[in-house]
Image (cartoon, rainbow, N blue to C red; front, side, top):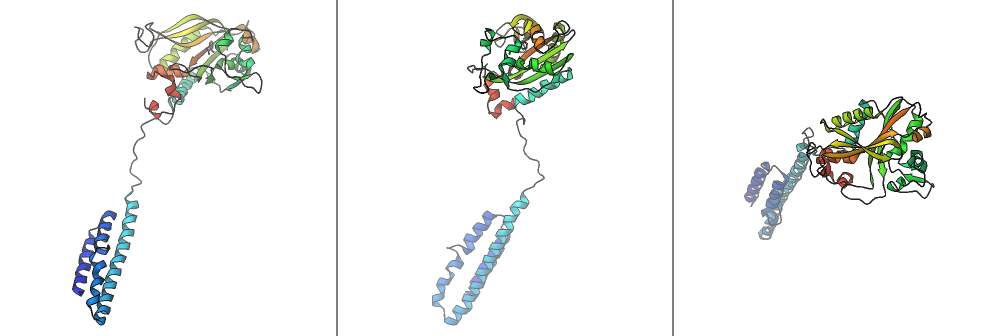
Length: 334
Ligand code: PHE
């Protein structure tokens, strides 16, 4: 019986030596120390032994069993530590597949950089503005029909405050702060009381441009637009001014860009006109200059407003504005 025990011990030690992971160790444990193992069932034979033999063989049996159990515990600890050692902290990680910032932020930054290079200040502004800033200062008294176009979310308190419908609300505050000659852009979010669909959302970004000096004029505006679109879309594009109406500019124009997708030939995106409407603009109305305490006989200037999401949609060929405002990270993989 002693030999049997020694044989078992020998093969247990041998096999333990080739155990390389926790799974193998568990198999080893089941095999040599488990319920059905030779060792677990060994004491059954004790009943046929004399008392002296029982003591001799029994103590040898206990010794071997304890020894194997200790070896098992030690090996288990050793292998568990190995897992940590196996983790290589210097191994290069897998690459993130999307840019860390949303398209709105990266494109806004790009646009700000372009205008800064063109000599424009970049001004931060409030979302919450007074009725005067959003309407009256822009030549839209309470009865003015153009107000309907921009009716929005009004606050109950303080009275006569609202979420701005356009960044033009910052024209007068901007011109009160910076005396001409001056050029600046006011980028930021605007809000409209409006049903959403693929091309409209109730909140979106605008970029307002303002330039006032003794001779700021349409040809300057045309140059700025041409340069801006060339740098932003990385393409040489045609610009077209179309007569339009805004209460705060006179004359007013809509600015069209030759279609990016069909190069003016006509496609679904430009509705076969070859042109895309990208901005509203005009020469700042003397009424607005007066609100900013600027003498309209001495100074003149242009203003424009363009929508950020529209530019992004054109650049990346995105057909639903709501994708840009959603939390779907796939939008950023474009
Ligand atoms: N504020 C106008 C709009 O939201 C755009 C605009 C800005 C027009 C500046 C003229 C001058 O539609």
